[in-house]
Length: 637
Image (cartoon, rainbow, N blue to C red; front, side):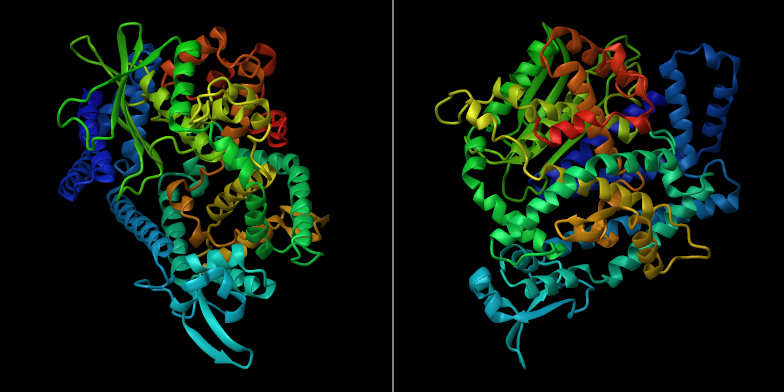
């Protein structure tokens, strides 16, 4: 009965969430937003129903509980824990505090994300925001006139002893252009330092969010927000997360230092000065390297079209999983835009799930890539099965335009989420598909990225946009990400930043933003680079410019869990290498994968993932996930 009620509410709320995110008609957006808020308010009341909560407790404590199917026990446990999140089990005074903190957390999260989005979109970096008008840098006008062109005329100007100067607002599009395009090292340094300077309002908001979440964690019986966020994860404690990040750093450091030396050499070749590579050199050197390889990237992208990727999806479904996608015409009013496509996932004539695909960019569409579950798998009281239904949203170019390798990987990543949702055959919808802990549900999507990242696999379906010719070997060799260790190290350091941020517990009250910054600098300082590394010796975080939490919105979305991206990347690389690489579409690993996906998120364990592997390739603890395959992939092997 509880899952039936939850199912009805989720079907309303999930459809409304999709509608308010993608519908082009603002009337629908407004109505959908009201529906989301109404359901959320109702669920807030339900989660504080003491009678319902005590019924769940009695059910878990009854003798019959252990005789119930595993999924039923797991769903009941998760429902009870969800109610405790709202404080239903606490004494009245603590419950009132919990609700007050939850409301403040929600408002802070909204304010932080909205402000960050405004900063990204603002032309001058400060319009309409609370940032100080002097957050930025004055630099010589002569150093930017060529790079900024007519845009320089829109900037504030002044005359100083050094001559004419323009003001570059921090965190603006102009600041990005200066860092990528202006040869003058001094100008780039000034703008970089302005970007790294304390964002007072943003830092204060993040410090308050930290304080609120640490209080919530303690009310729920956990020492820190990290411990709370990781309570049911594969890496179930902060100590295990730290062990994984430390091991990954040691394995990635040699390749990262090699990338840094290569960037330093490239800096000297470009005439930007020799010696030490500085943090403000990196955007420009990366940009110049990309320009020098533009023809190679363009050749690869000619084979990475939407049509090619959909051929790859068809291969995965038909050859690996023994299934098929069949496109159907939507009924009138069924979809929100004429470009939305409808597919049914089938095993012969049996419909397993429904996918709505909204692939192309259009005016007003802001989402780059996202997956929305509309209804989960569920056994209905009538005996019929509720068909899982999900939506993928992208903003791909129309027609035969090519995609970057990164964009193609993201496309297949979201396909992995969709297939996980659509193949679920759970009795209850509560743990169907991707409704699980994040370092478990991100595994299938990362595994699916390898259908693009593996060059041999990609060549089996990638075809030229105009001629239809298969991808030649010469182009296959170009289909790899350059400076791959650098990108992986950034991901690792963001995970370390997240862990450091939510490990800080102030001794009294709300922490000062400056105290948080000192804690982060100390915590991240242990990730040191050799002085021979491109002339750079010191903290990896300072080279990457990662010490500003107010710029990292994933601290709001994935607080305490951002490590999962590198973890699932390493875990999926190991599984791909040992179970799929030799024959990505073989039936035996395909059978095991389908069985794994059929369970949804009911069995969220490393053992469930290890079942995809040959026996000799498993048997490790989550924090000791083998890293050899990831390192080999980063080296282009």
